[in-house]
Amino acid sequence: MIKYKEMPLIRLQHHMEVFMIKKLFFFALFFVFFSSIYGGMNYYVYLQLVNHFNIVGGLRLMVQFAFWLFASSYILGKIIKRGKFIFYITYLGAIWMGCLSISVFVFILRDTAIYFMPNYSMILENLAVVLIPVLIIASIINALKGPIVKEVEVKPSKNLEKSLNIIHLSDIHLNVMTSVNWLKGIVNKVNSLKPDIIVITGDLVDDEYSSIEAFASTMKGFKAKHGVFAVSGNHEVYVGIENFKNFCRAADIKVIDNTSINLEGINLIGVSDMYRRKGKDNLLIEGIVKACDLSKYNILLCHEPIHFKNAVEKGIDLQLSGHTHRGQIPPLNFLVPFVYRYTYGLYRYKNSFIYTTSGTGTWGPPMRLFSDSEIVSLKLTN
Image (cartoon, rainbow, N blue to C red):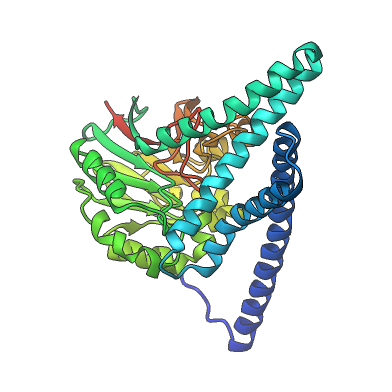
């Protein structure tokens, strides 16, 4: 057992003050950055539409007001949090974010095509304004259909006591917009797969505990031979680790941040996203693996699909991650691979594997285009 030295009260208060100042600074920095990008996207789409349809006068003012209203609704919903109509305000804002993202993507494609084919500019402009609503509707329908079951088989390099069926979930993002029926559907679908172990690789919660407490009883319905295990992701850091732990406690989910547990011939190792962000994950993995039985199969739960090769060198046989959403909607689908090497699917290095899931839910816009939500049924077979 690791023993920690007691920290003097004055020193502890100083550390807390520094932490809060840093947190406020980065929040302010992120808010300015996000507002600039988001505001620019709104203005760009607004200009494209009013110029294409030649909107002027009072109608133009009405369009300006509508853009301002829709653009601010998601942020207002997140700030207010409480209220009878908060669901509708937040949902409207989330849909708007998705519409905006797809519109920017299509308009950029249009402008690129016009550059190379200027003689077809009128056709391309008309095609763009028709294509945008089609893609928006398709993305909403695709998200509403719920997660597909993705079957993955991995043959371990080490002998197991028996074959295992691991259900891998990630990025559920429970918040005020989450539907209880949607969540019940996931629980029923997972249970029908008769899992030995259920793992959740981060971003389970995306709101304060009081806003999502009601979902805990639904998630208690998960049935797995060895139980349900989870690690924190970046959104747990944003909303507060205690909110995450309180929810998991109420939902009978075991949090294994920065620790390991032995289950039927495997070592299940978890790393919190907070440690990853502090750059301590490699050292932490090495320390945890050294304390494990190295003859067992080592499975790492890590929210972001990074440092895989380093983890393998430390003794990890399989890494399960999420976070990328496989882009979720354009243009992110095409940008994410530039940020994460292991964007989606199964990859191999030496005798070890990493599987990055596209996620069980959605973040922000309840929309998916060129990607699916998924429940991963991972078979470890001797």
